[in-house]
Image (cartoon, rainbow, N blue to C red; front, side, top):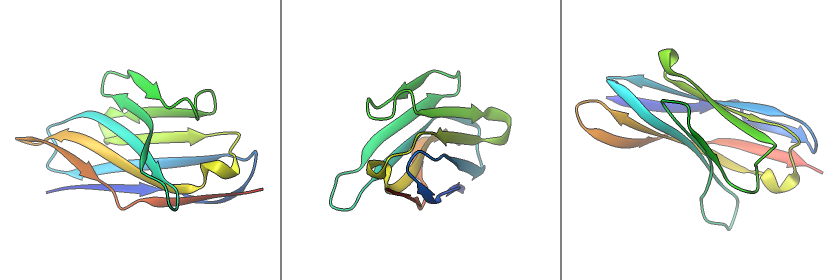
Length: 118
């Protein structure tokens, strides 16, 4: 059984910073990639940032230069450092972990709310 859990969301003023964490636990042989998505009210879920176990990263254009994704392989944890936050960053942020535990599967966390006030 594998679990993925996000933490670190909250309320912040525009221009502020937050750091989200995504921790995977359970029967894990290896993590191939961890990806942050977000979904704002009335909008589709969108990819924010992705990191592979080797450290390759990819960002959406809307967060490039403001957000940084990192991974701590030994702790099976990914982080999303969010700086210069804008009201349009307000959303529920979800973590997806592509994990091999005998079979390869994508696991989702329950989400964490980020609210940026103007």
